[in-house]
Length: 112
Image (cartoon, rainbow, N blue to C red; front, side, top):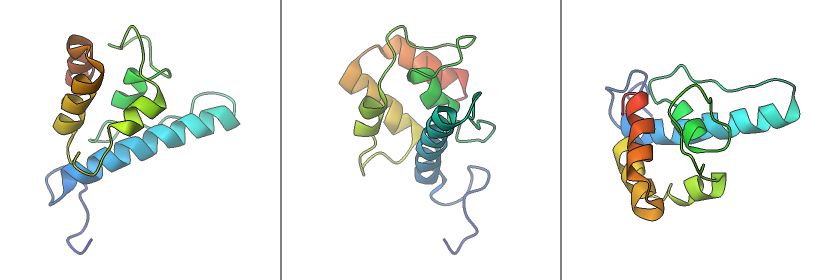
């Protein structure tokens, strides 16, 4: 990227970068947690990878989460080339899997 990235969600293409980073941080956390003791999730960034953790099996039970978590494959299957923002991902998850109230609550808990 020649325009200095997407750093704070206000740059060109920040939405699509955020969705990609959210997935990368989530999967990285899953793999590191499997490999090493403890929990290895980063989640202090504007793109909120914690959203995927809450939707999936590796949730933080103190926060809003789905009563029937989504699998990593279910989440990944929604990350098609036309999904370019958190809003589009949220809508795709709802259209495929229902549970609109729960999914919206998770996204809203993290500012989306």
